Length: 414
Ligand SMILES: *Cc1c(COP(=O)(O)O)cnc(C)c1O
Image (cartoon, rainbow, N blue to C red; front, side, top):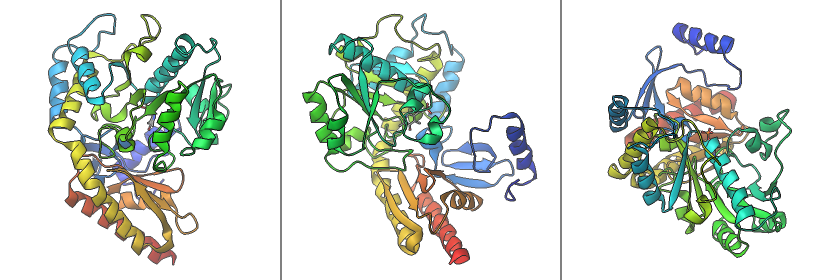
C-alpha cells in the first residue's frame, strides 16, 4: 500500500482493490467531498483540483446553480425514457443548438455513445445521401486519437493498450496523421463518408494541430463531400477559451460531439449535433438511448449552459489560460531538461516530462501529496485542466506547489 495513504483512506483503497475491476490505476487520494476548485480527502486534507475530472467539472464541483436546478427537478420527475415528451428536453436542445450553431441535437449520456451516434449518422448519410454502397462507408480517423472505449471505437485506436485482446473489431476506419493533409488525402477513397477528429488531441498529450490544418481539412471535406465530424467532448464548452475549439481554426464542422462538461459536473450528458440534412438520416427506431436526454439530465445541462454564459466562464478561460501557461513555462525554465515541452490552449495545458530525467506518474503522485490534483496521460504528459471557475490566485498557488515539487524532485535526482 502507498505510504501516503492514511488509516481511513487505506480501507477504501483496499475495498476498491478487493471488489473492483482493476481497469484504473488511480492516484492514491480518497475523495470525500469537493466544492468548486477544492477537494478534501477522507482525512480532511485539502487539494486544489487542477484536473477537473478530464474537463467534466468545468463549472467547478457542485456549482450552486446547477445543484439547485437538479434539486428543483428532483421534486418533479427524473426519468421517463423518450417514450414521452418532457418540458426540459426541448429547452435544453434549443439552447444547445443556438449556442453551437447547429439545427439539431441528439442527446446521449457518455461521450463514447455520442461518438457512436456520429459514426452511425455518418455511415447512413454516406449511403443514403452520398450514395456509397451500403456497408462500404469508410471514416477517416487520426492516429493517436481518443474517442472513447466501446469496441467499435477502440477498434480504430492506435494505442495497443486500448485494443489488445478486444477484437474482432468493426471495419471501415482508415488512419491519417493528425495535422498532415497529405496523409488525409492518401487515406481517402471514394467510399469516405466522414473525417472524425479531435480539434486538439487530449489523451494523446494535449497535441495542437499545426496552424492552417483545419482550414485545409475543411476545404478538402467540402470539395470531396465528406463530413467533418468534430469530437469536442473534452475541448468544447469553453475549455480552450472559446465556446468551441473549432472557432480557433476559423471553420465550422458538419457535426459536433459534446460530452464531459455538458453534464455541468453532475451527470453524464452528451450530444451529437448536426444540421437537418445530416441529422435527418435518423428516423424513429433507428437510434436511441433509455437515459439519453432524460428530464433530470436535460434540466442540469440546460442550467450548466446558462451558468457558462452568465458567469462568462468562456471569457475567463481565455483570460486565465495565458496566465496558467505563463506560470507553467516559468516552472519549465527553472526545471532544466526535466520538462521538454509545455503546450495547450485556454485552461488546458500539458506538461511533457522527459522520461530520461523524470517520471510523470511519480511526479503526479508527489504533487497530490503536496495538495494539487493532476493526472498523467500517455506516460509522459502531466495534464492540467482546472475548473473554468478557478481564480488567478489559485492558479498561482497550484503552480507554486508544482514548481516546488519539481525542484524537490530535481534536488533528489541531480
Ligand atoms: C473522454 C472523451 C470521450 C469519451 O467520453 P466518455 O464519457 O468517457 O465515454 C470521447 N472523445 C473525447 C475527445 C474524449 O476526451
